[in-house]
Image 1 (tube, rainbow, N blue to C red):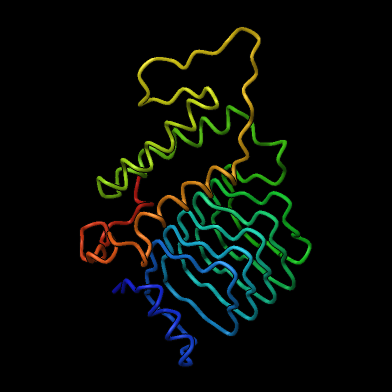
Image 2: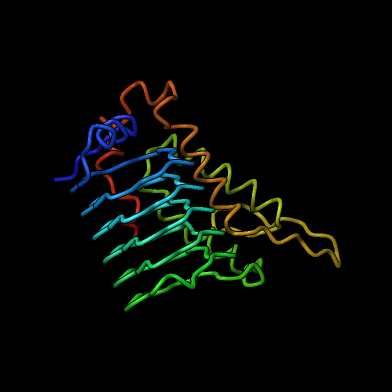
Length: 238
């Protein structure tokens, strides 16, 4: 049975010495700049959680799911991901040492400027995994935003509206035509729209989600984890 846990409770358990977590869910959490060592996660789910510029050492993630997770600039030493799934996130500028990904699934994942020499990937599957900024084209961004639409339907209405507004603003800025957009965005003849970096796009969406539902937010104080969204899997969009 999955247990949704507040980020403060999770950090408190680590402080008091808990090292193994099974069946835990963390939503809309900001753990940027922290150090995690000697931990093991099994069957856990991390939705809209950021661990930018963190240090992971001797950590194991087994059968875990990451949806809009940001690991930018983090360091991984002797870390294992076993049977994990990554959707809409990335390891931009992350560095790996003596680490492994085994039977993992990476979908819409950014590995731009990541130091992968110390990461062994075994029997992993990849779908739209980007390793260099040159691979991020307007067509790819358009496809990524379009593919995201069904996933948003699994979120509560308020969250859907906030994220859709963000996506619409990005679409207009970069002249991207989305299925839900009425009419085409006008582009001057000969004008080439700037290419947004994928990780900036994903980071913006993650930050928006955390700002709305983060533990320190008043909306969150109204017990968001008791709503139906806590029982939904945003990745169940097929």
